[in-house]
Structure formats: C-alpha cells, structure tokens
Amino acid sequence: MRHPGALTTKTGETLRLASRTMPILQAKPSPMNLHPRIDLSRYPIAAFGSPEREGLVASCRRAIGESGACVLEGFVPADAVAEIAREVEPCLDRAFYKTKRHNVYLVDDDPAYPADHPRNAHQTTGSATLAYDFIPKEGVLDSIYHWSPMRQFVSDTLGFDALYPYVDDVAPLNVLVYPPGKGTGWHFDIAEFVVTLLIRSPRGGGVYEYAPFIRSEDDEGFGAVGAILAGKRHGVYELSQPEGALVIFKGHHTLHRVTPVEGDVRRLVGVLSYAATPGRETSAYNRRTFYGRDD
Ligand SMILES: O=C(O)CCC(=O)C(=O)O
Ligand SMILES: [Fe+2]
Image (cartoon, rainbow, N blue to C red; front, side, top):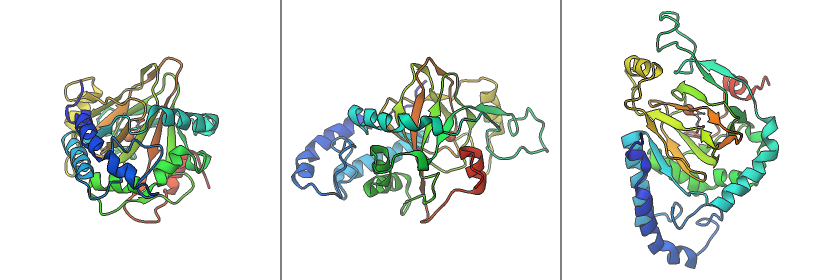
C-alpha cells in the first residue's frame, strides 16, 4: 500500500512551477544558487524568496505532516547518481558489517516488561554503515551534503531555524549497505528526522515500509507496535523510492523497516545527518554501535 501523502504528487506540480523559473536561474548563475549535481530546474531549492521554492517547501511540509515522509524523485539525476555509486563502491568493504539485535525503540530493554512484549521484542538489522571518514571528500555526495542551500531547504521543510553539519569524523554523511538477505528490523529512529538519498536499488526487496505516527510524546504505541510485529498490514505503507530520490523522514514517531534485499545487487543509501545546534559530534555509544569504533 502506498501512502498518499508520501507520494508527493507535488512532483508534477513542482515541475510545472520550476520550468517557469528556469530562465531566471540560468540567467544569473552564481556559486550560491547552482549545484551541478542536483536537479534545480525541478527542485529550485536555492531560489530563495521565489514562489517556486516556497511552493516546494510547503508541499514537502504537507507531505511530512500527513505521512511523516516527503520524497523528491529525481532530486539527483541518473548520471550523477551513477557517479556517486562509482565514488563509494571502492570503499564499501570498509563499512561496519555487524548484525544487530535491538528492540523497536533502540534503547536498552525494560525488565518491567516480558521479553516478547512490544517494548522489548527483538528485531534484526543487518545493514552495514560506511563512516564519513571513508567517503571521498570533495566527491559528489560530499558536495551535496555540504552545500548550504541543501541544509537550508531541509531546515525549512522541517521547521527548524537552522541546521548544521555534524563535525566529527564518522557521523556527518554515511552510506548504508544492504547485502543480499539483509534489511533493518522495525524501529523508531532516535533522531527526530533523517535525510536519505537512494544510490542503488536492489533487484527485489529492500522496501522501506512505515506506519506513520503510531507513537507520540506521551504514548509509546505498544498496541499498534504489537499488531505490526504480529504481521498486521493495515496502516503500513511502502515508500516509493527510486534511485536519485531524496527522502526527508520523521522516524522518531513513525515505525519503519527495510525489508530484506533479494538478488545479488546491494541496496545503497546515502544518509545525510544534520544537527539543530552547531558543533555536534556523535556519542561514544553511537560510535561503538553503528561504526564499531572504540576510540
Ligand atoms: O535504509 C534506509 O532507507 C533507512 C534505514 C533506517 O531506517 C535507519 O538507518 O534508521
Ligand atoms: Fe530508521
């Protein structure tokens, strides 16, 4: 089942709006408003103050409000996606490959509940994480992450005053690698939001499934979580996420997983992490858990 909000039917709308702005954007190129690898004619994220950018931000906000996710298909065109894949492919054996067992809340189990209760029931995650220090600097993926209009666009769609890059050696930008048979178990993210770029789709499986807003600040949603863990499909949606799609996702209150990859092509996804305060570094716990670092 596809969630209507997440389809961003606005893609077409954006296209039409954007095509009217193109001559203006092309007439006055400057390093500030041009990024050679993002489809700015379709997604005018750097056309600050323009009605087209405002319309795009508003449609993303609407999709996120309705479904917890916004998908911008073709955000990075196919040739640039292929270049990113070529960039990261030689580095992938340096990713942290470790099968993790966790509950859906990604915190320690609570002994007040039985082991099979939704609070504690264990899930398996087999994706590997390529840390920032292994990703080529000044490459296409890195340039998208550090482009300030990109950050500002994400910030505007999520309603922050500003967002900042992480400043440590592992967290800013990652590539998640899903080998055949691997996926992520159901979980809620610790982070309030995540930004991903689909670099490579597998032949089958590797589908991002999600159940929007079944948790809130004052309700852990045990009933709904338990039903989904038991296999109930009502209220579970699939994200349509072709290669080159940018996804902005509020995963803290939305249960989600990636189904196991089928076939011999690995699923690759770039994860762009931004923080609400400047100078943020990842915690020692996360360094160990997600990157296998003890230092
Ligand atoms: O692979 C993805 O698209 C997202 C994975 C995910 O949910 C996570 O890393 O928290
Ligand atoms: Fe997640």
